[in-house]
Length: 166
Image 1 (spheres, helix red, strand yellow):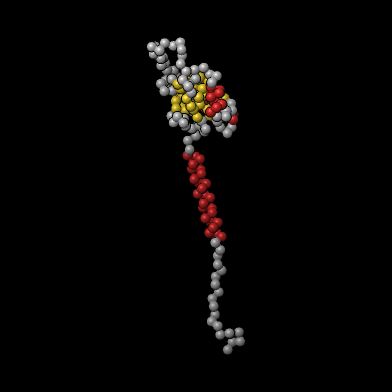
Image 2 (tube, helix red, strand yellow):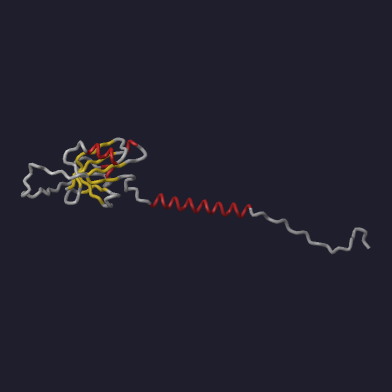
């Protein structure tokens, strides 16, 4: 008999157990990549031509007390000045825009002047704080019927449009 033998059968050594750390790390990386891809898809797929925080609201209509109500209104159409884009950020006084969005979330685009458009009576560039500020600025503009403002994070891009419904 072997002096080192104690009568017990020889047991195979167990392989070392692997922790769950690598699996958790792999899952975390996959989740981050998935969320990053979804965020990139959303960011690149959104419509940048819609103004952020832009809004318009009708004002009280003005009536010309001197005009003869029996005379038809002059529906003269004029072509807008050439523009590099239909985005309202590039509109100038005298040009026309039309609303392709809803009344509570307008999406203005530069268009030819005609029925169901708004003529820009005045453009006021500079910081705006919203609806009350736009109303106050346009209150000084004769014959305006509606207003629109664009309020961005960068105040130098803000503007107010004082509009006349055609």
